Each structure stands twice: as C-alpha cells, then as structure tokens.
Length: 38
Image (tube, rainbow, N blue to C red; front, side, top):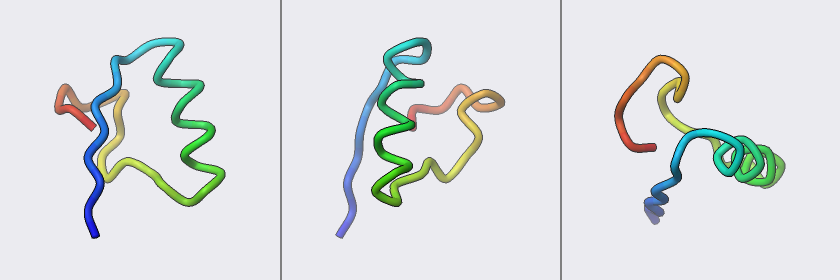
C-alpha cells in the first residue's frame, strides 16, 4: 500500500514529521535538501 502526503515545510511539517516518525513513517528523501514534495 502506498500513502501520499503533501505537507508544507516549516512548523507544521516539523510537528507532523515527528508524529509520523513515531508510527514508522519517514520521508524517502531529506526534506531539508530536496525541493520535492514529500
């Protein structure tokens, strides 16, 4: 199964990324170095 999320960078991304990380969902690329949507 594949899930696609679109998040804006900044405070909202940081808070959401922390929550997603706790359940094992991590971006494939480093969002700090990539301009791609994650």
